[in-house]
Image 1 (cartoon, rainbow, N blue to C red):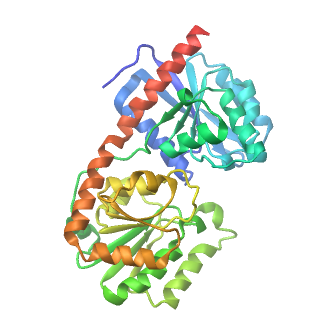
Image 2: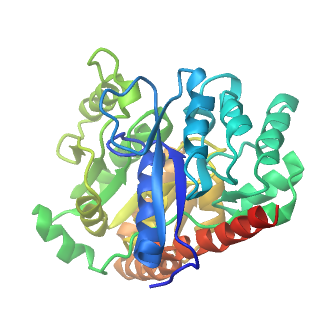
Image 3: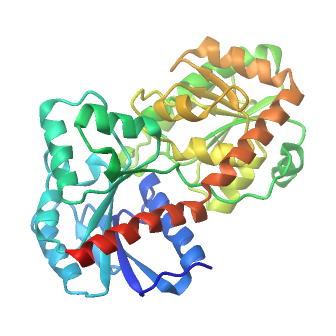
Length: 388
């Protein structure tokens, strides 16, 4: 276990479980990685981002992002704790109130601690307003983490951000004990099926429709395929109890007569069960349709569980998914998804080799290794703060 010289606190400004969103889970896993490596020599606290008042707060700090007055107030609360050495902001534009989330500036103007960001979205070709705003955010910090080299390149070329303040770090993954799909399937009694899967909080951006239409073509030649669609619909998309997106997907299943080939796992699974489903997957379908999606945790997790991949071309997959790991296809192209999947179904040896390569590649991306990368940057910020 590594230690740092002085016991310090880091406050993460982020959503956090039980909130169901990717950034909440990302922050939880980041903190777990830091704790696993550095133990009690560093304390991580949460400033939880919520969108309405919380009756019984469970974290050290709570920020209602809809209430502009809270941004400065919460910053002043954090300032009072001398042990807080750094605030790490998990940044997504939609998390904060105002235009481009500019209410966050009220927090930044009040906080007296060093600040760093993780940018979960890096939008290419920004208009002048967005470009100016991102540069203004980073003027409070001089430190930002991104998860792909493409994101770093965009920050430098499109926003004029200096290379030396950018830390590139792959999306973290869990350390998984390798298991062949056949063995893993026994837990779910699906040993006799060839399993495709997609997971995550469902919404239009996941573009599951493409996977379903591709499946209709796949089962013409491979009728034994089972497609697992794992995850609940994003809570923000369920209005007055109506889950319109899932209803739409279920209608497609009926229309295409896929009832025997599709199984919805309509749950927000705990990590271990999710990883078990991924280990039981013969081929993972990454169907996202956002060409500017900087990074995908679902894609990273599937790779770490030795899943051969058929994936839409987004910046993350274009950078990471080399031919020995899977097959890239055009966003929304049903024929390409079907053709690539059938190619892998027909070649078990190729699937096995791709899975092993993906499993091996992601060992370097463990949350514990991410923790070390985080701490190396944190130390530099601590030192700069002391000098100032």
